Length: 614
Image (cartoon, rainbow, N blue to C red; front, side):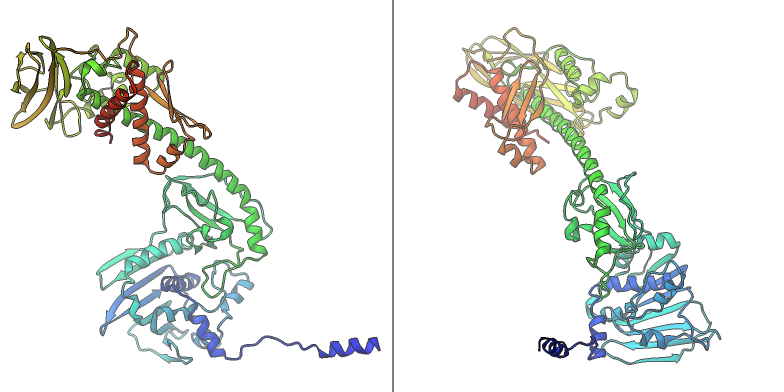
C-alpha cells in the first residue's frame, strides 16, 4: 500500500519547458527595452567596430522636413551567405542568436556583441531602418525594417560606386529626439566607448548638417593624478583593469564600470555594493573594467548579481582599502592647505581693521612699530611694520602673504610680478581715532592699485580739515601730524591723492576729548605677531576656543557643535574662525574691562574685520 501511494503521487507531478506563446510580442518587448537612444547609437557604432571598421561617420541631417541619422563604416560589412550575398535574412530571423557568439566560440577576439538584439534598438531612435551592404559581386543590397512591424524586405539598391562596409540609416527620427545633436552624440560616445575606440584605433566622426558642425570622437581624458600600484585580488574568471585618477573633490567625479572597453554604468556607485567610500567620496575619476561580468541583455545597462559579480566584489576589497588610505591623506593635506588659506585671510582682514581702528587702543601686535624696507605689494610698505611680528611669523612658519613678502626681499622675479599698477584707491590710517586736547597724532595715506598692491611713486598729496578744529603740519606728504585744538570736538580729516589724471580721496574721523583713558594692551611686554590657530577635537566640552599666549596660537575646538555646523560651508567656517579670533584677541588685550565693555569691543573689531574678510 505505501509503495502504491508514492507511485500515484509521482505520477501526479506535471513538468514541462518554458516557451514563448507570442513571438512577435516577445520581439516587441525586447525592441522597446532599450530606453536610451544614445545607447542605441553606441550599439550601432560597436557593430561597426566589431566589423573591423577603421573609419566610422555618423551624419545627422534633415530631408523632407524630418531628421535622420546615418552611420557609415568601412568595415567587413554584413556576413555573406553561401551565394556571396549579404545574409540579411539571418540577421532578421535570428533574434537573440547573434552570429558574433559563433565567432567568439571559434576564437575570434575583439567582438563585443553576443545577444543578437542590438539592431532592434532602432525602435527607440526612429520609425524606419535601412541597412545597405555590398555582396561579393560588388552589388549593393538593402534591408528595410519598420518600427512596430514584424516584416522586413531585402532588395538591390542602385548606387553610382560600390563601397566597402555598411550604411545604416534611420528615418525619420522620433519627435522627441529633435535635441539629439551631434555634440551630444560625440560626448556620449567619448565616454561610452572610450576604451573600444582607444584600443581599436578607429576614427569616429560626427557630422551635424543641421548645426553645420563636425566633431571627432576623442576618447575621454580624465583629470587628476593617475594612481599606480592598485592591484585587485586575482580571480579565476579573468583580470580586472583599473585606471583611476585622484582629483580635487567634486560631485562630477565618478568611476565608471566598463566591460571589455564599453561602459556599463557611468558610476560604479549605482551598484548597491559600491555605494560607500572611497567611491562616494568625490575624489576619484576613471574606469574599472571587468570583462567577465554578466550584463542584463535588454538594456545592457546593468549587472546580473551572479557568482561572477560576487568574485568581482571580493577582488575589489584590497583596492578599496588602498584608495581609502590615499583619500585620507588627501583630506589631511587639503585641511592643512585650507587652514593656511583661512589664517592668511583672517590675518589680512585683521590688519585692514587695525588700519581703521584707533591706534592707541589696538596697538597689540606692534603693527605701528619700526619701518620695514619699502617694497611694492607689501600691505604696510609705506608705513611701519613690527620686527617682532616678522620674527614670530617666521618662527611659527605661517605662510601669510605679508610674511612671505618680507622674507623674499631678494627675489627679483617676485618683485617684478608685484610691481604696483596705477592708483585706484586711498585710505587714511587710522580711520577712526581718539586724541586728547592739545596733543599730536600722526596719520598717513595708504594708496593701492586695483589689485590692492601699495602704490608709492608719482603721487601728490593734499591734506585738509573739512569739518571741526585742529591744525596740520606738512599737508603735502604721505604722513602728516594732526595738532588737536584746546577744546573737545569732532574733526573730519580729508586727503586727496593724485597720480596723473587719477584722483582718489578718503576721510577719517577724529574725536578730540579732554580725558583719554588708556585702554591699550601695552603693558611693557614685547608685542607678538598676529597669532596663528590650530585644532583640538573635544566634542564633550563646551569651550569654542582658547588663546595659548606662550605659543601665540588660538586653539579651536573642532568637536564643538558650532564648528561642525560652520564647517559645512566654507564661507560660514571662515566667518566663524574670524569671530573666534576677535573674541580671543579682545579678551586677551583688554584684561581690565568689564563684560559689557568687552562685548562692545568685540562688536567693534568684528565689524571692521568681517568687512574685509574675502
